[in-house]
Image 1 (tube, helix red, strand yellow):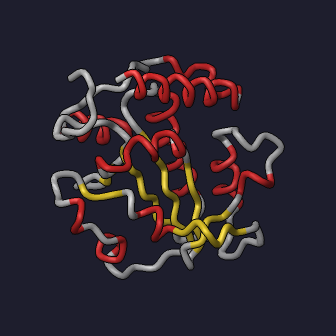
Image 2 (tube, helix red, strand yellow; image 1 turned 120 degrees about the horizontal axis):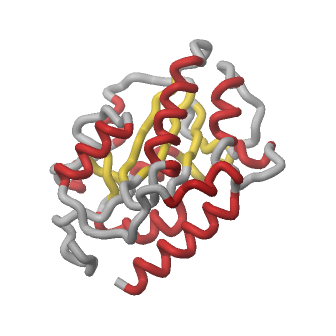
Length: 203
């Protein structure tokens, strides 16, 4: 439990310091706790995540992903390589960078890629809620449909409205308004779930 709280405090403070827009993040924030699947699904609907079933994190790697990917947005090109978009912004920690990029994104972009970070590798952390974690594959989830870009957006219910609901709604709006590209949003939930047995959390 102590480890969870330490991770939460560190990443939360980093988020607060990173961008002026995040100052109001405190609305609705609380310590991480084990949530029921129905609660997470209800919040997803409220926030604007319409995938069903939801993409969630595997229990075996949830702590690692939260530490490295707390409320983070990752953009991948059509070949699945990560686009290092934050390098082109003065404040590389600002949550608004991805929105600015989406608004002007075309079929091609010359922003540098990180060939060591791929969508396929990222998807190894995920599975579908209420499904066997070992049976998830990115190919089956995408059903063979190809896109110009893939946006992985990590969200949760414990870090506040600004970091989640407002951000998700902004992402959905900006993607919808850019008709030049075909972009697939992959919202992945970071909440701890009641079904988890190896992590000690209050329920």
